[in-house]
Image (cartoon, rainbow, N blue to C red; front, side):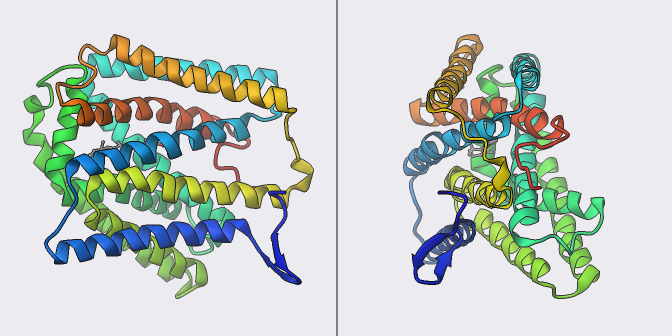
Length: 345
Ligand SMILES: CC1=C(/C=C/C(C)=C/C=C/C(C)=C/C=O)C(C)(C)CCC1
């Protein structure tokens, strides 16, 4: 049972959420170290392999986890809640697609913001649930923590891999309006400088304020170690692989660990569904997700953004995943005052 520790032998038992935390650190750490070594030896990995890794990480591993998050958030919360959730969700999806059609550069900025919000707030709640956040005593500090952890996912690659970042941004905008990014290309270098600077200041402030609250506490030390690990990972691992593996190996793994811990703390919350109902919900959810992708493909004037097949699919999939991720954060977490997707009791 997921709510119990895993008994190894005799008194030796291990908690699955500890394994999830350790595995996330180990895998991200090994990848960071591996790519540092590759860059020292002057080697790298082809863009084609990066794109394949991205699609496997994001489609095969991360997408099902997103479905699971909705599922576990909606279980046994009643019909009116579920109906309101779905209605709001659909509204945000349609609105976001409309924004991409009307103002693709603004929409792309919002898409990047979604990745920052998801990575940052998700990780903040993992810290709440599994590590401790005693060193984050104010709302400002929590906001800073979320910005730094989420910013590592987008701003660090923007600083270290500007060309790939720009090229794919161009493809993503061209899905809706070819050439629209070039019109504001001058702003790209400026945003890179401003966001990079802001991130650096926020990083120092986050670590400094956390230290000022209680010195070298356990939670500060772990937070500082993980934050610097993420920064190193996104600075050294080529951006497409880095983002494609961050979501399954860090975000999803740690959220799965958090939900195991939450279930264990609330044995009374055993709200498993009858198998046919669970099956139906999952299948309908998967179908609805596929319909959003198909709908986007139909309304997008240029679905592959004028790129070759593989980079075009990556650009299209990324726009699609951001379109379903934004309402996941806004409706599933911020408008769900009681629980939210990153529930920690
Ligand atoms: C900038 C950039 C990318 C953007 C990735 C994004 C924006 C991913 C968002 C993921 C989300 C929101 C997942 C939610 O679960 C690519 C395509 C890797 C190519 C390189 C440059």
